[in-house]
Image 1 (cartoon, helix red, strand yellow):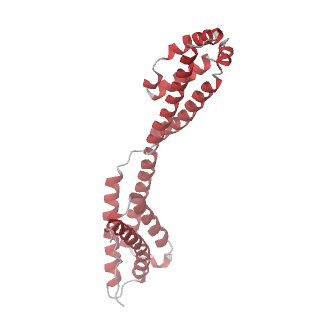
Image 2 (tube, rainbow, N blue to C red):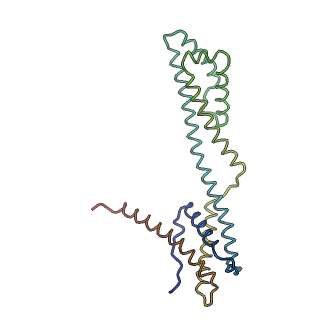
Image 3 (cartoon, helix red, strand yellow):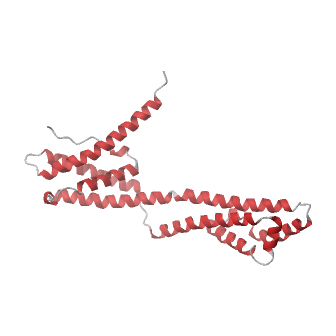
Length: 248
């Protein structure tokens, strides 16, 4: 039976899938009996790939963290809407036919005017300003005026939205301060080149006369994972082709 290296277009895999392939290979090859691991060049390849793969995995984590930028923007939009809701509700009472509501609106409005254009402030400045607005309206006689207007729910909405934003934004800042920056595209290219060299090397060695048993075992393990991902890509392509095929 002739040996072969299972064909796989690894470059077509997504970043996450390629990382999973590397993890699968690392786990599979780790099962090889230590008594077989006597070839220095093979071990050197494995060490290089594992080290580069660890950096690549860290880069993928960074990409996932960067995706939080969108979540942060959405939470900021949520709290901006909460502030706008408070503002609109307050203006409605300015034209109320109940004098007590008009007066309460005027007094609360004096406080609120000190916090103009909250939505235009930078993230942290807006966070601090909303915190201060909530604290100010919780002091003195302001709570009773809010009760008159039944506007406590708007304060709660603003405060909750602000706390949710600060929680995610604060975590993100801590992570960025302690996380090294990775260029995933460059790291993947380096890892993929190294991986291709390694698989070609294992395949070539497995075909040599009197090849150490290590290479036959390693080739079988590599091929098992490669076939799994090759089949996955084939199924994906089949689905894409079916969608593009004109209806009869």
